[in-house]
Structures are given as C-alpha cells and as structure tokens.
Length: 530
Image 1 (cartoon, one colour):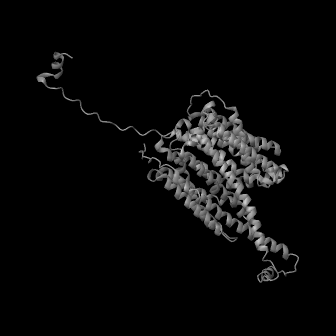
Image 2: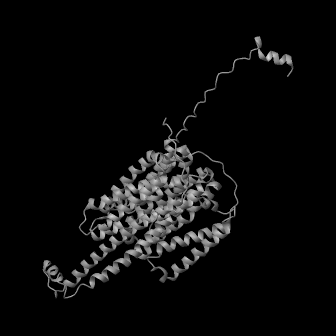
Image 3: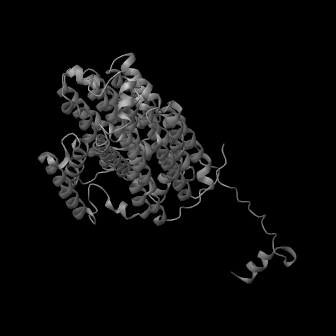
C-alpha cells in the first residue's frame, strides 16, 4: 500500500473510521422435533414385534387342541418365531445399508402383517410353523430399526425423550401381552392374537410411507462366510435355549449337537471377523466400553423382566386358581408404573442426574420388588401380588432409558442400525436364556421341596391326623393319600416360586458392578421446548 493510500485510509483529519458495531451472536434455535406420525409409526412397529412374543403364549393351549398336537410339538410355534427372528435381527445394519432404511422398514411391516394374517388362517401345525418362521424373519428388523430411527430423528440432547418413547413399547408391551392375549382368546378365538396385528400394522405402514425419510442406498460387499457362521451360531443357540427344557437338556443328542454347533460357529465368527472391515457385522462396535457393558447389562436384565413374566402365569393359575384373563390383569399395575416412570425418566430425570445412578437405582428397586415376592403364600390376594410388581415396575422404568442412553452415547449415527440390531439380539437372547434357566430351576426346586416335605408325612406326624379330620377323612381312607399328595405338591411349588423370586432379585443386583466400569456420560443439556 502506498503512502497516499495509507493516508486516504485514515479519513479526514487523520482519524481512523469508526469501528463497526459489535455483532450479536444469536443462539441457534433448538432443533425441530421429528413429525409425530413418524414417532407413532416406529413405536407401533416395535410394539408389534415385542407383543407377539408374549401374546401368543396364552393361545398355545388352544392351538394344541385345534391342531391335535402334543405338548412337545406345539412348542415349535414359539421356537420357529424366536429362532428366525434371532438370526435376522443382528443383520439389521447390513440390510439397512443394502436396501435402505425406508425400504427395509416398509418391507418388514408389510411382511409381518401378511404373515400374521396367514398365521391366523393356519390349518395345521406345519403351516403354522412355516408362517411363524416368516413372521419372525419380517419382525426381526422392526425393533432395532425403530430404536435407530428415533435416535437419528431426535437431536442427541433429546435422546432421553426418544428412548422413553421407545421404551414404552419395548418394556410395557410384553407385560400387557398376557392380559390382551387372555382377553382375545376367551372373548373371541386364539386366531385373534394374530389378526390383531393387521389393523395396527397397516396403520403404522401408512404413517411410515408418508413420513419416513429416504436415505441413500450403498453398494456393499456381502461376507457370505461370516453370514453363514452368524446364522449357525445364533440359530443353534436360540434352538438350544428354547427346546432344552422340553428335551431334558444335554441328555438329548440334538441339544448337545446344537450347543456344539453354536459354540464353534460363534468362536469362528469372532476370530474371523474381529479385525475384518468387510465382516457382515462391524465387530469394532464391541470395542466401545459403554456399548459392550450396556449390552451385557440388558442381557442379564432379561432375567429380571422375562423371568418374572414366566413365573407369574404359573403361580396365579396353577396355585391360586386364576383364569387366563384374570391372571393377565396382574401384569397391568406393573406396566402402568413402568410407563409413568419411563416418561418421567426420559423427560426430566436423565437431564438432571448421572445416568449410572439412575440405572443403579432402577436395579435396586427392581430387585426389591422381586424379593418381596419371595414372601408370597397360597393365600396372597390380588394387591398383595400387584404391589411388589409396581415397585419392580418403577425400577424397570428407571433402568431402561438411562442404560440405553449410556450404551449408545458414543455410537455414531451411521452405526445406529447395526448397534441397535446387536443390542436387540442380546436382549432377546437374555430373555430366552432367562426363561430356560427359570423353567429348569422351577422343576428342580419343586422336586427338592417335594422330597423334603414328603419325608415328614409319617404316622408320627401330629399334624397329619387333624388335617385329615378337617376333611372328614381318616388315615386309612382311600382319599387320604391323593389329598395329602395334592397339598404337598402345592406347598412344594409355592416354596419353589419363593426360591426363584429370591434368585431373580439376586441376579438383578449382580448387574450393578458393571456400572463401575462404564465411562461417565456427558451431561445432557436442557433444550427449551418450542
């Protein structure tokens, strides 16, 4: 710059021009919330898949008579759905990349609705098993896709709200399933537990078509060997967990072979794919400490949720004489408590407290409610059963949202579909393993208590004769033996239930140490509402 230019630049009188006024930085407006119809669509799709696991259980005895099947054969109605769903669920990320998230979700909803209609029209056991296989295949991506879409649609600071909405479907639907299934079966027909999916699915499909955004489809290389190993590992494991109790576990060659196949396939899959960028599942997700610990926690929590759900129908119907519909209503107070707590936790608490403290508090309350059930007896009334369930339901509501937020805190949006698939798979495997363990322990504990109680049925027992006299019988009456055996059986089962409720509480508390190894999550900032 020349001197003239420099002088001219000073302005008149050699003074510098006035400085420009300071720029006021405006805060960025809060990101818009996703469209409400989109939220309703994805939550309904998640409810469809999860509800179908428990609602069908109530209809199984009616199918047994309709198809003329044995107790062993009818279990394939459940096994086929669980195995096919477990195989496809971890492939959600791969399928979403290959087909596109929108196309995959619309295909899954359509296939699930059609297969549900076919299940309702099934004419024999073979057709039902085939249609349930299809239902499991199409239903598997619904839960992980719903979670991924919600997390992607909401800004990260609103993930607590997104997970609360998602949790309402995932955690509450299985609890109300028995009540809804009992009502539909008794009032109409067992086929209605499948037909109920049609209007809900079509409504969700229409909303998804209109509001689900499109995403680019990418060309990817398919790892066929990894895909085959994954199918073998997950499919064999789910088969072993579902059929083990019916076939006396490792006394069966089929169960032993399935366990061997699952173990070797899983080891081969991990060894081959750990550092393989082209693996069918990105195993680098498991290097995220919070994700792997959160996944382990939700797997173990299957004992707390589904273990309790497996016991309550047996307890209320076998020992207390409740009908299916009345037994189903026992789940409603816990479901309501969970729903309210989920909403409060996702909307308020997760933004005020460390997520790890909320998860720990939820585990303590869930364990407390379950351990209180260990004091049940044969004369417990409705609210005596429901009140501990409410306490456990509050704990469940405190547990789910913070744990999922903790697990997905550092997962990038591009990996949400894949991570959600793994997370949902392990939640399902945890539930299946819990039901298998609880069923096995129930049989074992019942037999142990039966042996202990019958050892006291002797002529020298001073309580035996008054008990028989209350029923107008003597020690040598023909009806005395069956009456005593019946009562001893009831008491043995009651003691077994008490032991199992206590066991579930201990397992729930055992999850707490995992929290000490998680990273402290970033504090969620408050975002003003529009």
